[in-house]
Image (cartoon, rainbow, N blue to C red; front, side):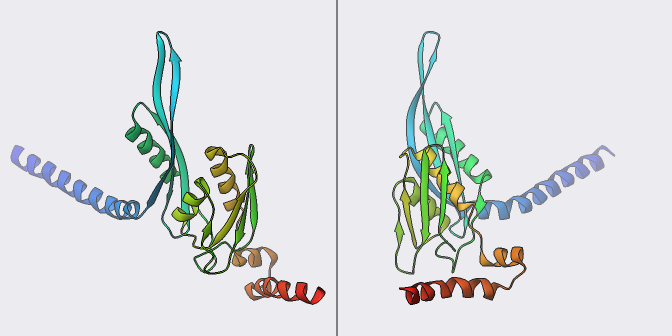
Length: 203
């Protein structure tokens, strides 16, 4: 009887391990496809009794190169631990951004956070990523191939990243706009394509 209970317990543990392994496999495979960009590392100090305690603060951008991106920050006594904390936070805070043809934004958009203000503009094929510093890391992780950006505010990487994410959350696809207005997608796209021609005729 004791042998039967032991065998039953071992079988249950083995089944649990198999089930956990199956559940973890797709998640591990998805995380392995993520692109991680280290934006910056700063040394920080905390004043305590008896002196100052030094540590490191890291900010990381994570994306899958297919329209999902997130950012995170972490502090620790050692650099690798700070990067790990920032990466974990970025993976938990990923957002999805609709892309046109999988390479650029659907429309121009502005974003701001604190003293940071950014302008993001869609671009034709072959333009490349015209951005600097933290913004370039975001678009490389996002999978954008053509975009023109401009930072009009502070150069603080934290505020620049948060302002860029504020802008990216405002990007909507023509399908969503059409559903919101009760129109067809072709009506929305037709207006967008006819706008340059109308402007040229007005000139």
